Amino acid sequence: MKHLLKIWTINWVHFQNPTKEELIDIGEEYDLHEIIIDDIVDFTTQDKIDTYDNHIFMVLHFPKYDYANKRYKSNEFSFILWKNFIISITSLPSNNIEKIKEEYLNETTDLEDPEKYKISPYYILYKIIDAMYDKTLDILTKSNKDIMALEEWIFDQNWVNKKLLEEIMVKKRNLVFLKHNFIFQWELLTELQKTIEKFYDWQLDLYFEDIIYKIDKIDNNITILSKNVTSLTEVYNSLMSIKINSILARLTVFTLIIWTLTFIVWIYWMNVKLPMQEWNSAFYIIVILMIFLSFSLWFAFKKRWWFE
Image 1 (spheres, rainbow, N blue to C red):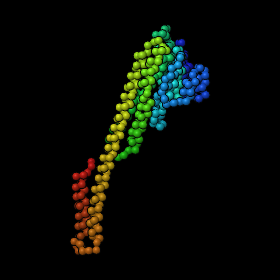
Image 2: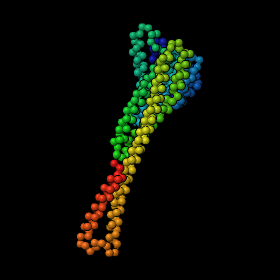
Image 3: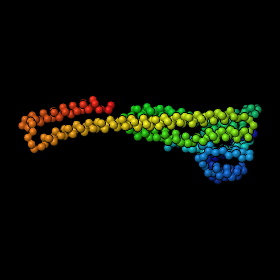
């Protein structure tokens, strides 16, 4: 799917989920270097930036949540920037792209002097990256709330809960994905900031310093959340061990009581002369003795070894 937006002297062409044949046509139509064509045809998980004589090629990856599978997928963003032209390509739909396009359409309606506004391919690139980072920070804020809810859920459980364990593992897996997704972007953005100076006269340092700050914030938040999930897993395992030990203690006490009663019954099965054998009330006395002994053992074990 192709979208063309003309912003004064700037052309922005966006392609959403193009086919391999369409990507090859894009390369031929805009006379792209064969290396760029190979990179946009073969989707990769590697972020990169390549500088050519009159344009920049850049690949970034951002997470997109798959609600059906409760996991993040990698949405690859490819950018080719000239002085007055930008091509953006995404492997999956992105609402932020559409929002930025709408902003430009609304802002440029009544402009008298477009030079007062940040209308350039490089500023458009900044807007896209900034929007994706803001979205990621919102994701991490929600993840933090989810982790706090899981912590409360853990302490409300009396036994192993498969759904709870699955939720913890899903959070852990997704945070590992996010960590891997952004691990190299700080260096790449620093390089991009230096590269843009060669192509564009306006000072955009402040803007790109802002997104470098955001990638640092994202990395720190992911690290903290990962530690919280790991700690949550350890707490869950510890609580389950305590509960399992408590169950085993109860079973042990129950077994000892049953064994004691069985031993008494076994004695009176023996074909030998035993106390109270001739008594008419022997049976009731033995039953009462066994009941008394059972409760005595139960209270004794509970007071000393019971796990509450």
